[in-house]
Length: 189
Image (cartoon, rainbow, N blue to C red; front, side, top):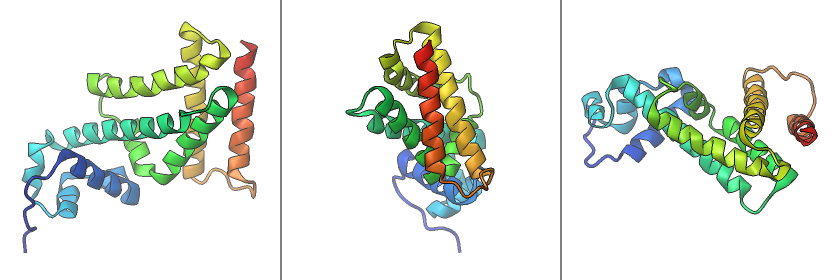
């Protein structure tokens, strides 16, 4: 029996379904066939929204970056300085924990030089620069600090996801200690 066609399927609904697949089964399982099956449509219908699997992966990467930005922006509301850095750091890690497939998709954009991907990513960078303004970082120094924070957060989330933290220590406490060390380090500059 073939899937029952859905009328007026919106891109957002399709991307949400792709995100669910990624979070549940991993990004490698986000295929046109699997997505169509989940949506109850035929795979050719997806070509109205994507230029093949590459187009789907690009849109999912942008969706993931935008979702991460929204989480970070929400976390940054009403806080500044050390509290803001800690809050967005925890939000980042929690996003990676809650949405492992979407997080992975955001990092595995097919073409990181793509203008649409650059635009989505630049919002995350700009938000982080604004959060770090409390430390009087400017220009390239601010961007180096953003890279440092991102490296810490990505490394932490990657190690956690791959089971690299086996000791019976609270991971959230470890994260707080690491972020406090980062904050103390950028104060020196």
